[in-house]
Image (cartoon, rainbow, N blue to C red; front, side, top):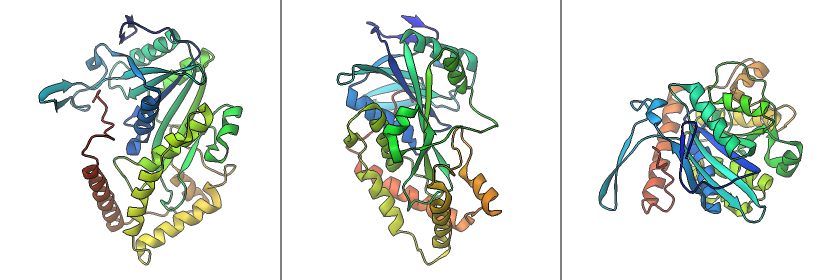
Amino acid sequence: MRIGEFELLDPVPELQDTCAIAMLRPWIDVGRVGTLALRRLEQYLGAKELGRLATPGKFFDFTRYRPRMRIVNGERVFTKPNTIVKYASDEYSNKNYLFVHVREPHNFGEDYTNSIVELFKHCQVTEYCRIGGMYDSVPHTRPLLITGSMRDEQETKAGKLLNPRKSTYQGPTSIVNQVNEDLTKLGTQNSTLMAHLPQYVQLDEDHLGASRLLEVLCSVYGFPQDLADRARGEQQYKDIDRAIDYKGEVGALIKQLETYYDRVLSKPDDQPNGDNFASLSESLEKDDGEQPRLSSDIEDFLNQMGERFENDQGRRDLSGEDDIEDESE
């Protein structure tokens, strides 16, 4: 069955009152927090593939999103980047879910977004929640912030886990935001959740950021809280913390970020907005007149440190149990 540019697998399920949860890569999926959180929900609910783009090369430049060659069970497997949609039903809430791994299109952006909207209409999507992550001027020594906007009752359920804030951003954005505009006109509820990650610690997979997103999603949609397992992410950040010399320039910088976090960012009423997704560092400049910046030596040190810990973690994961590599890559 074909809907827009998507080819759906038979038999096509009949879905209604559906909540679509999506992440956009690579623009706002730093630390792969959106991918990690989405995969965790898919695993929990036993999500199955609904469909994918029939001709992904129409939208994606394969010199920028590279196809992959893998060895699976001794056989060579060739895969192309795609936008994959999965579906699942929560037997406890009787609610249907779509999980959408959205990619930034290079060509025919309107056709791409129109196809997503058509698919959502077919699946009777009544709520669209975007999740993701962005780098920001926040310290790794404080709870990671989750900003965004949801319905009042959802924000109440999230409680202190969410710093609600409506967007006032103006500037360049993604064509994928056209989906939000079109769904709003159709009366679909839109919501956004964004994890703010330390700019100086850039992990390939930030598991603490993903767990913070999951904590909010579990509170809002009634999933078990143990899906948001913080142990792996907390260990990542502990390893980083042990490697930092707090008596030097790095420590002084982190102290500045902690002061600003405690004075401004931890207070929802004063917190700068993170949608689409203006940096909190702009607020640092406005508030203090001077933004704390990393010297090149500090950046090199912390980036190398982050790569080392990520590589160490990767070696511990060679069993593949936690491999979340997207088959669409």
